[in-house]
Amino acid sequence: METFTVPVGISNRHIHLSQDHIEALFGKGYTLTKMKDLSQPGQYACEETVSITGPKGTISGVRVLGPARKASQVELAGTDTFKVGLKPPVRDSGKIEGTPGIDVEGPKGRVHLDQGVIVAARHLHMTPEDAEKHSVKDGDHIQAIVPGPRGGIMGQVLVRISPDYALDLHVDTDEGNAFSLVNGQQIEVCKATE
Amino acid sequence: METFTVPVGISNRHIHLSQDHIEALFGKGYTLTKMKDLSQPGQYACEETVSITGPKGTISGVRVLGPARKASQVELAGTDTFKVGLKPPVRDSGKIEGTPGIDVEGPKGRVHLDQGVIVAARHLHMTPEDAEKHSVKDGDHIQAIVPGPRGGIMGQVLVRISPDYALDLHVDTDEGNAFSLVNGQQIEVCKATE
Image (cartoon, rainbow over all chains, first blue to last red; front, side, top):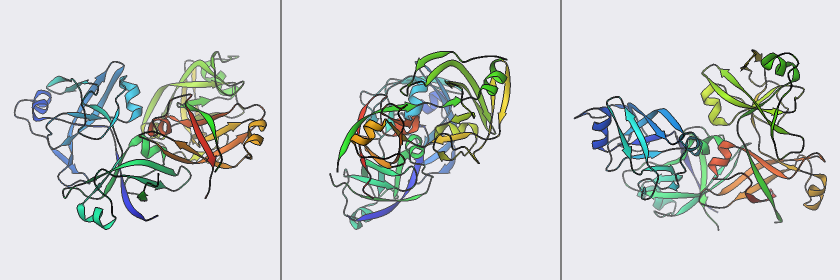
């Protein structure tokens, strides 16, 4: 079974916003302020944060990620979903049809998202060169092998390939904590045998 | 590879208290009020809750579990540890030597625990009869096989055997959410092959 090594990136809850929603929340003509670059080229964490409110509660300080997207999307860890009182499905980023909505509040206004709340499916970003080297295709599912006292195997890791990506295995904070992972840790992955 | 099926119990953060600490927090001569029985015979969730405060923050509404124990112990999910600002080790219940302490506040007073904060190691409670049937021994480590879109394998599940136990695989909320488990769900376990 061929394995290869990838770095882990642990995503905290965050929100992607459309330009319309950025202006509704932060003011007309507003553009996001980059705080720091993320592992994927062109993606960045912003200085801006918002509050999100569901049927059972509010989470404040939710980080906005840039740049603006076509549709707004909120990515929560399962732990967060209990706090706001929603049951979003585990989805690949961008696949928000039929997902729950939520109220979003910024310093200059609020918007109600009709849909867009997901728990992100774990996935591995790869360049076409990385993918060819390791004989995996876009849409494949692979396994990640985690060592240590909370080790195990994360199955169903979706492979996503683009020349715009950098090699990084994205999990959420629940997954990171369940497996005692730290950001940037190198772990082995392999193709699923079942 | 022989497998057998066990129910999953997902533990939210909670605290076990010594009788001294119960009285310090709730008043002299106080005894805990049972709210509901837990899966393990004689163990119960109490009406009482406390607040815990570490270097970075407070979590309120932390459920007290009864009955009173010899030593107080706080069991947090990894997610909680960031909120209070502690880095407790993954430990088996009761093994609190060298673990961080925390401030605990109840309606009638507060105490500082010098140690006792842990992230609980996942474990499988079994009776001697269950253990014999499935050929496992106290202290063995087994694997839990989780199906579904967030499936995988939880390694390093500690087997704990006592006539006072009932069959139940205990994980914390991070583990439950990482694997999309629900309380009471039946999953397969097997002996580790490595």
